[in-house]
Length: 171
Ligand SMILES: CC(C)(COP(=O)(O)OP(=O)(O)OC[C@H]1O[C@@H](n2cnc3c(N)ncnc32)[C@H](O)[C@@H]1OP(=O)(O)O)[C@@H](O)C(=O)NCCC(=O)NCCS
Picture 1 (cartoon, rainbow, N blue to C red):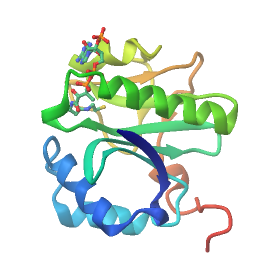
Picture 2 (tube, helix red, strand yellow):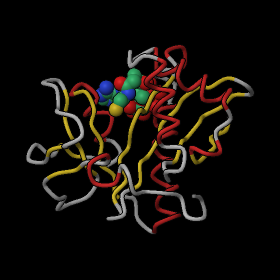
Picture 3 (cartoon, protein in one colour):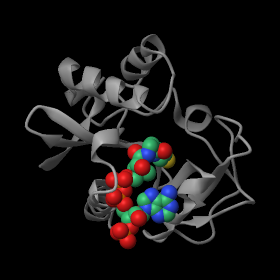
Picture 4 (cartoon, helix red, strand yellow):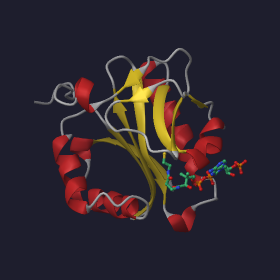
């Protein structure tokens, strides 16, 4: 079992298919819109984290980097056949360590369903009822969490950075 971190432009199409199939277990975005997502953000400095067992994708998550130093933690998922075995925990620790190594800190914001608040609290996240995410309105059963104090009031990715962010060295 290993975890790899890849930029969007480094993702092999075969692994994109596996990521989309895994995400379909939980979220029905539709494959077309999901392929469009990978195309749209091809040059963006998102980081994709893939937990692999040989050719199997066991778990996946991604971070969208904001230039203010805050990472948006997104799409954390463990294959339903592998849940409750500690893989989700390993993946989150890996992601937080990765950003600590890269940036010297790991400031993350995420949206999760309320029944997962307890899961994220074990990594130091706390609910932030006063902040909003302007990219997508929250549903009743969702909450916003951060692992740092004094967050700003509004977060977004698409509106703030959607058209500007590019990986250094890429187009
Ligand atoms: C949430 C999810 C990633 C957890 O992955 P997992 O591999 O089953 O979690 P782990 O086995 O690593 O659990 C780690 C710890 O968190 C605890 N935990 C797991 N889910 C929890 C929850 N909803 N609330 C509180 N604690 C939880 C476990 O009991 C375990 O505690 P322990 O170390 O003391 O035994 C997984 O259930 C999943 O993919 N869910 C569907 C997708 C989803 O909703 N993702 C979140 C979107 S933000």
